[in-house]
Length: 73
Image (cartoon, rainbow, N blue to C red):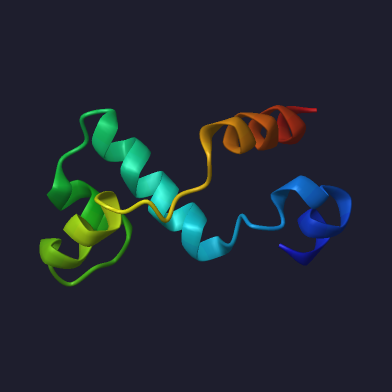
């Protein structure tokens, strides 16, 4: 993450924890079951996962799209 932050100042607020929340939220929006998301995140129960997918603690989509384009280069 430190390397990404040095190269892309606009991603400084994209912490690893926020990326986990973002991934879980996107998976839920794409139709993935809560149980599958919970397993992927190694949560012991779906209650914790429910918190992950119902939070505003996510990376803004514009930043996410920028990051994806940067990674593909």
